[in-house]
Amino acid sequence: MKGTHFFVTMAVLALASTLAYASDPSQLQDFCVAVNDTKFGVFVNGKFCKDPKLATPEDFFFPGLLNRQNTSNQLGFTVTPVNVINLPGLNTLGISLARLDFAPFGVNPPHTHPRATEVIVVLEGTLYVGFVTSNPENRLFAKTLYPGDVFVFPEGLIHFQFNVAKKNAVAIAGLSSQNPGVITVANAVFGSNPKINPDVLAKAFQLDRKVVYYLQEVF
Image 1 (cartoon, one colour):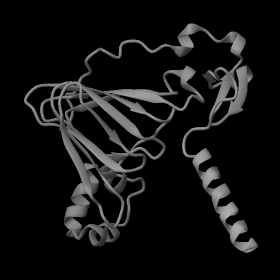
Image 2 (cartoon, one colour; image 1 turned 180 degrees about the vertical axis):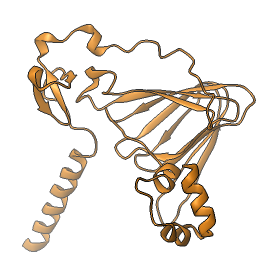
Image 3 (tube, helix red, strand yellow; image 1 turned 90 degrees about the horizontal axis):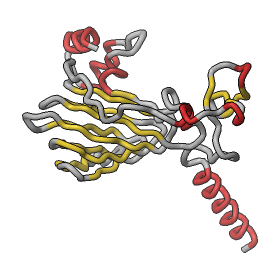
């Protein structure tokens, strides 16, 4: 019986430890404005912290998120990230956001955020969005969204957004990390540097090697 209690105790402690590290670490001070020069701070969780006495309102400010972005590219899509890179006051706070601009029939292609859950709210237009669960189910959860609608994409799962209308669409995304990262599936698989052996991709995707060569050139 004692052995059972010990096992349960260890399991609970392991679970608690896992949950404690399920998102960006909590800060132990009011803020930790990120700086890139070691002369002005100390290294904390991927960034150097500015001396709090030298912080200014500008460190916590990002302008112009309402400005429409240029979507004249191959995907008809542009993302404007607001993360620790361009808003240093986000450092250690565990959040970030982004503006998503879509041309008619523009797409934010299948991708993942390795360090964040994402939630979006549509401001204008109509978006078809969805995510796919992990193996072996690979279940698709998809929905058509209209202005004011909200949808969440769980951390690490492949997801996408597609403008299904003949007019522009705009959404705002919130992410549960100061630096969520992004892995676009097609770019990562077919556009890696150096290239993945075409035989691997031909076998994995059940494609002719000529198709693999073509996709590697495209990406």
